[in-house]
Length: 321
Image (tube, one colour):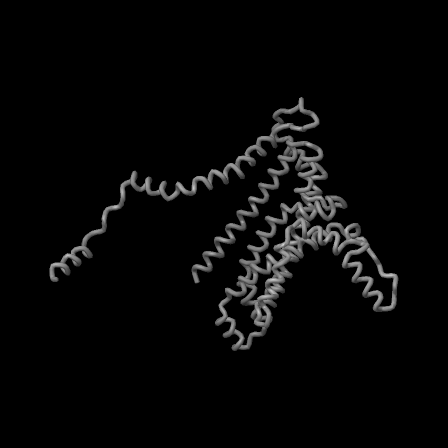
């Protein structure tokens, strides 16, 4: 018995085994990474290889209507993209569309999140219903707004106007063509309806991570609801607001479905993805279309980098608590 105890003491007091040698460590690292290689190769083939081809084509004068004139042209495609009037208008439209949709979606998402953060009967059902618009296929959502809501003959909006006018004893209700009267606003409304649930989910997660004991102490000390929101809730939600704005911007900058389905890029609603589509599939100018695509990718990478930094900062703050 004493011998066993002495052996255990000797084992406890003995120095740790030496670390593995360099070759053995590298073999162990490759053994852990080997199962990930097929996924890495597949990702490179699907994403990076097409981008490299697009980058090469962007430096070429390549138009399907003039196959004999194909050749290297340098940065002329990028110069024409940045100096073309239609392209500049598309860039402005993209910026306006993105800013309006993101800001309004954030404001509506915050309001809905504040309401859903309260305790009430049926909260789970209401949350599920509020998330539903984000789950609808983008093309189906655009078709829904174009035909079921905006249509001047049988749309729900004009039907509602007719019902309201009849309540006041008038039969001559206005029947505006919403898409023709406000084309860009029509696209923005459809996108806001679809992206508000996404913002709501992010902000609701932020609200549920608040330190409730500190908020309860502030209320006991006499802080009003507005003071709690302004000095405690809103600063806590700052990172979540930034995250929602950056992620929303990444997706809305690349939006094509709503513009193509609702307005077909007409009436001043053509954004960058739609102009790239026109340049590639209608004008068959592959060089300029590729250059415009590279410009969009660079802008998206810049936004994505900011989003990743925001996410990492948010995780660091959560782990520090």
